[in-house]
Length: 274
Ligand SMILES: *[C@@H]1O[C@H](CO)[C@@H](O)[C@H](O)[C@H]1NC(C)=O
Image 1 (cartoon, rainbow, N blue to C red):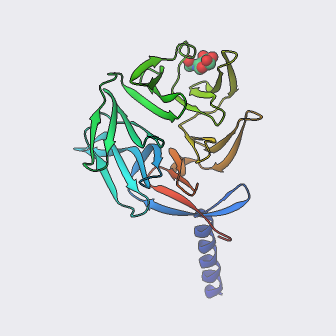
Image 2: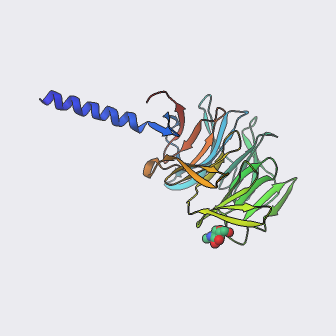
Image 3: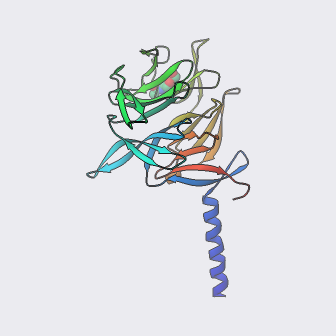
């Protein structure tokens, strides 16, 4: 009898472990593969397909104080490194057309140099950057710590006046080049043609990201969503809360979802069964 109970318990534990590492997205099975552990609250992930490298900010303890750092993770070799030199670095974005990695900190926009693993402040703005998103048509969008939207193109930084009367915490561009932004009230679409702002619902957006086709997604403390631009509906793909809550996400070169939670950077690997 004791043995039977033990066996049942063991089976139960096994099943729980399997289900914890397994995620169903749009009816397909994926297994969570930890790419990097012991990385706290990795935020604002962007992926550079040319170098197979992920960029992000994260928090670390230095002399028992929490500090913000920037880092990279090569997805092929899993080699991780800290990027120093960006003051209070927070934001990342990649221009895949011209192959430029942008990093944003308290005193403006920097570029990253793979050869020297160093950064350079472009000197185009001294604004405190919160978030960035690169669009091949419009340029490098960014928001500041005081929640104002800007765009950097052809060496010029311009404030986006149309959307700046209200707060803009994070912003992104969809597959039809519409501008999406989010603040503490929810997620909004800015329509260039009508100059109107459309309310898309009360979602708490942590970060936007796009896949290789330019389709837009976002993470929130309760899950990961796809933005359906045709019907302007948000389609919840992954539900995660608490310790597993998704801080940020990006798509790798095979369009696998790579995301960060409290302590890990994880990749969802397609599986027939898991
Ligand atoms: C967020 O943006 C919307 C749309 O512009 C605006 O109506 C709302 O007041 C903003 N929320 C905050 C907290 O600024």
